[in-house]
Amino acid sequence: MLATPPTAGDTHDSAKAVNTPPRGEVTVVIAAWRAAGTIGRAVASALAQPEAAEVVVVDDASGDDGATLAAARAADDGTNRLKLIALERNGGPSRARNAAIEASYAPWIAILDSDDFLEPGRLAALLAIAHGGYDLIADDLLQTPEGKTVADGQALWFREDREPIDIDFGFFVESNVPKPGRQRRELGFLKPLMRRAFFERNHLTYDEAMRLGEDYDLYARALSFGAHMRLIPWAGYVSVMRTNSLSAVHSRADLAALEAADDRLLASNKLRPSEKELVSEHRFSTRSRILWIDFIAALKGGKPFQALRLMLRDPRQAPYVLRGLWKIVVRRRTGAKTS
Image (cartoon, rainbow, N blue to C red):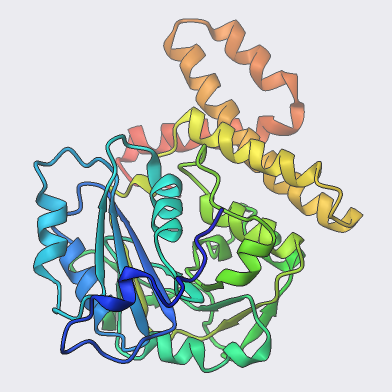
């Protein structure tokens, strides 16, 4: 269950520094694992937002002799808004975020990845439309290569048309279905403000079995419950694109958990037939990736006939496997990267 706002007698209100700014409206949640090199920038950028009532950092059992927590603590601005939590057992980003949300109180929740950061004015821009009855308010991501400046970033969604858009369940899920030849623009990557009351009322939390696609799953479930979501052009969230990012490494177990999330959506009785079709498309793409892992494992294990049976079990999956094999051939012959 998500945490509820504290009462007047809570100790949080009684222990304020002299230079504490006016109480903000947003809890900024930062889940961190071995992030000593980037967590300070993330924390400082969050504390620089006057609308941040608190910044809650959860160290997900980094096992780095406290380096991540020390770096986060060093970025504190002395306003009593920084809260540090250390988990004893690594549970992934979903568990860490749930722990932070449970320990927080502000009416809006903002997720910030430990290697990303916020530009000034981001929270103010999002809160400016909070009166519109939205439960999820997102700005576009500025995807910036690691080591580059903000000026080198590229927007995830808005390229030409910059009019804000309202996102419904179907639009959201369809954007997350990978398609050959289509540039990746999954709205599941967004980091919207989330209205705490809506998520509490519908008992919505991150699925702690998921280490991949946990944002997609939470937003999809919220939209299936009737959440109103708005997307505006970039207002300050900088997503740092790292070549060794955990989000780029997908284990079979990670993909199986994502597939199970779609199964739960399909079984929820909250979707229209057209929406079920879109979720089934998303599930099919995830199943294709699982098949690829099993196919390659069979080949590496010297079981070519088992690999062939896997591919033929569902002939619709064969093009995905063949594309993967072709990429391997091209890479080995030319050394070129394929997408």
